[in-house]
Each structure stands twice: as C-alpha cells, then as structure tokens.
Length: 565
Image (cartoon, rainbow, N blue to C red; front, side, top):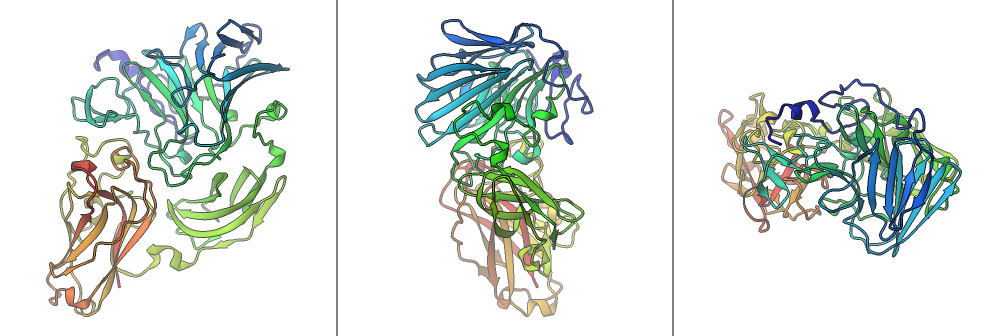
C-alpha cells in the first residue's frame, strides 16, 4: 500500500506509553477511556480441545488461541473471528522458536494453563474464563537459549503505521539490515521505540475498533535497569511484531538474570488501551499461586522497600530509586515534594540501592528485602559532592543528569538514525557566553564525523593564572570512542583508557544508555591565553583505533562538559 493512501493516516498509531503519556494517532484519541480486556458476555464456552497438532483454547469471550503440541509456538490468535497471528510462515514464540518440547495442558477451575518445557527453559500460557487475554511466563535457567525475548507476530495489513519503529514503506537499507531510509530522507527501524523501560506499560496498535497489545511484565529478571532501551515493536511489509524483551544482548550494561519472569500479557480490546489492572504495577494473580508454575513466588513471598524521603535533590529533575542484585531488579519514582518512594513486590534478598538524578547515580547503599514485610528506610541524604552539578565551574555546557538531553539532536536520536534529514548538522563550533552553548553542541561525537569540535571561551587574568580541571561526562561509547583534548594547540592530553561500555551498536539504534563515566583532564596554567580579551580554544577529538567509518566509527554520547574554577 503506498504512503499516500488516505487510510494510512486514519490508522497509523504511535507507541503507547504510560497512562499519563500514552498517545495514539488515528481514530482513538489520547484521552480515550481504557477498554477492559474482559468481554462483557461470553460468546462461547470456556475450555480447550486437542486438534492433533495444537491445544486449542477458547477463553469463553472473543478469543480463541492455539499452542503447538510440538514446540510451544503460539500458532493462532483468533479474535472475533479474525486471525491475527503469524507472517512469513512464522509463529509467535520465544526467541526465533524453540525446538521439540514437552507441551502439556491442564484446567483448574476458571484457568487453563499450557506448560512448555524445552531443555532448561520453561514457558507458560494461561487463559482465564471470559477474558480476551493470554498470560505468559518465561523461566530461563541458563544461556542455552541465547536471549530472552517473546515476539507476537501479526499478519500484514491488520494494523498500519508509519512511525519510527516501522519500515513498511521503504526498502533502502542504510545500516546493517535493520535501519532504513525513506525517500524523504527520514529513517525507520524496529530499534526506534523512543522510550525507556520505565516509560511504558504496554505496546501495540489499534484500529479504533480493535486493539492488540503486549502489556509488559515488571522486568524483575531483565537486565539494564529502568532506563534501558530496546526494540518494542516493528511493522514491515510482511507483518508486525510486538516484543517482550528481557535480555537482548544489545547495548546491555549488566549480565543477564535467570529465573521466572511474568506474567506479560497478550491483550485484545475493542480499540481502547488495555485494562490498567494488567499493568505491571497493578496486576494481581492469586489465581496462579497454585498452578505449579516453576519459580513462581506469590505476593505473600515478596516484600517492599519504602523510603521516608530524599534530601539534597535538585528539584528541577525527576529522581528514581532502583534496587538490584544478580537475581532481580526493581525501581520506583521518588515523590517530587519530598523524595518519598515505594518499591513493592520484590523478591527477598539483599540489594544495592541506587538513587538516580535523571539517569545519573548520585547515591548508593544497601537494603534487605524480607518476605511479607516492609523495609522502611530513614531519609536518604545525598551529599553535595555526589552531584557533579554542585561543583563550582567557570563555565558548563549542559547540566549533569546522566543523559545527553538538551544537546543538539538529542531528542531525535532516540527514534532516528544520525543521518536522518531532520538532524541538524553534526559539525559546528561552540562559543561560551553565546547563550546557545548546549543547543549548539552535538549530543554525539564520532571520530569520522565531527571529531575536533571546538569550544571558544575567555578567562579572566586570575583564572588564566591557575591550573584548572576539565570534566567531560559520557553516557556510553561505541568502539571504545573516548575524548582526547587539545587546548590552544599547545596542550594535548594523553589518550584516556576506555571505560567499560557495551560492545554493540548504540548511538545508531536509538540508545545512548551505557555506563555513565566522567573523564577528567588537569590543564596547567601555561596552556591558557594570557590576554583576557582573547578566546581560548578547546578542541575535543574522539580517540580510538576501533570502529569503521561515518556513524559506525568510534563515538561517544555526551552528558555534560565543564571547566572547574
């Protein structure tokens, strides 16, 4: 279907984010009332049958689905008589599909559970009488299955969109085999989801009369924390895909975690958003407590962490509190007024607790979670020295928050390739005192694109008589790209050692999230201009022998740059 087709604009949709920020373009408005996933009346009898190749489950509402008895694939999703599942001869499944598995089914009252065992991996599908939902759990015990992903494959033409994570209408590949350019110069890729894990509750599409979504789990067994970015859905000429990704192996900052994850929910609606009762922060599944799901821990076996408040915050920023260990991760937002936070439904254990200003860690400690109890923490005081923004600076480009937000092209880079026509020039120098220091400085630097960008600034006589420390904060790097500086063409810093960063693509696939790191450079007084009316020059180069060319040359994402007094 060509781009100009009028029906495209009527049916195109945006990624659904949290309830406060969800937006859908087309017949459903952003303020549409959420439609519950339960049918108002049962259209058929709840139950299951064996058709020889699949277990066929009728939810007693408007949904009938099939699971292969051979490998646990979801082979059919029929909602109100329409088949939604599958494209290109492929089914919906873990990763790219499991091999021969042991698949069993059992009914317990108003719940049907299908259990799939593939080596050490276990997969579960549950249906509840009268609901248009499929509840899914995954228990990955080791690395015998490479990643931890479930993909719902959807037939072509049922949901149409031309958003950043779609490449239906273009075939021009500009990077690898998964980043595309349209004829108008805009870029598209399944990687361009725009959002972090903390930002969304569900992902999917709507036509206005039918909605199909994956409601994400709490990601307690995922890796990367609250600010991790990954692909969430895609649309191509072949069909669409909705994902629940717990470990993808791309731009990962942590080792993968193992154990039971879920439920995540495949939900059909009459066009509205999925019921908020299914959201990871609200869902309650006492009906699953006695189903025998391997690794399942009921609410009674979990605990809560609550903090009285946080002092020392910069109230211009949102703060997040995360707890994590090798087995699980959780997080919660700190209240803007006083920093109060609550992290419920955590597995028992001892965790590292981290307070984030934006995405920058400014406090760490330890906390122990006990089953059936609340661990209450006294007020957390963030020392002034823990926030680099508190250091007195002669000048500063951007503020320290662990992200490149505010720099040139920063917002665009979460949903577009750096070569996108909408991107401002990646080159161009910066003058301190111009008022455009931050907006003129590019969010990313590459060895083969804009290495050597120059910052112009003046110093007073007293300032030029002293040595100063320059700091450059980064959020990630590609191919070990790191900044090396030259001041007034007289002082050249050593090439710093590269900090630990993910080894995969990041800057070109919508993610700046790696490991925040601060490079410091001690600049002697002899490097400065002695005339207070003369501009000093700071040239920032990208050093690395790795990478290839252009936007895949060695690069790095910038958080903030400052010259300390």
